[in-house]
Image (cartoon, rainbow, N blue to C red; front, side, top):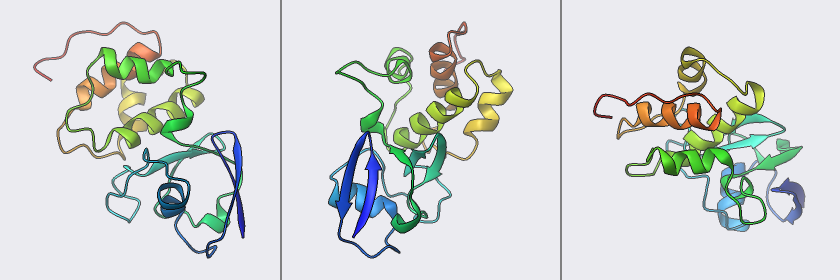
Length: 157
């Protein structure tokens, strides 16, 4: 039995401690935010926040996942979207949507650590999340909006 604290609630799951956290989140806890992408921790679609740090849940064993785990579902509070989620909508950052869990969760961890990042800090902080649709400019605009920074229109992005 493994005990996990996810989105403010404690869960007891009967799994092998070597099971990837992603599998437990999706299959046992029925959370659909983190997604399976590469299974190697390289694409970012499975990103969650563990004690304030963005982590690839496909390569974190559930037995080592101690602390508070936040998934995309845990960002909204009392039915209100997280400002970052609202900025994502306002900037129309999503195209196909597959990478968006990783984009949003990585951006939330970045903003928690640095509430007013520069453009260069945003690009550096987000560089590990891959987007096949190339919505990087809209993602950067959404992060800037959530940080309260002026957003300049992008060129065709």
